[in-house]
Image 1 (cartoon, rainbow, N blue to C red):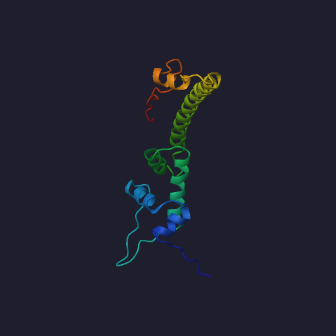
Image 2: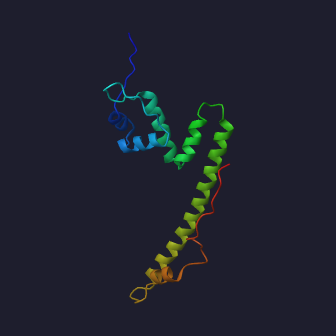
Image 3: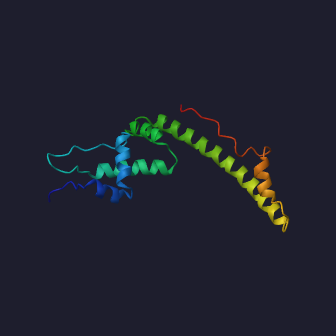
Length: 151
């Protein structure tokens, strides 16, 4: 039995990975996916290795990695750079934990504001609206996150 390499068009690749064609083209322009040669007068063809790489990018994005970070991970994907990949993941984990801390502060503030609104039934001045105008310095929920440099 002959083993045939199954190939597909960019539309087939997009469907297989559940992404838009424009996403594939953008990833190609960023160097995350290869742009296959076009046979003379033909259509570019993609294979299972392209699906695998696209799924790698898609999964990494779902985990919160930026396209630049994904590019770094792809350079390390031969398996010989596990420490470097681990360092990138640890850095990402730290940023996620900081984001969770900030979101918890936001949750606390919003919960208190909602409680104040419920307590002020029929009052002309809404405590939530007033707080937004005055700012909420004790919670520091709108301060930008500290930039973290990549190791």
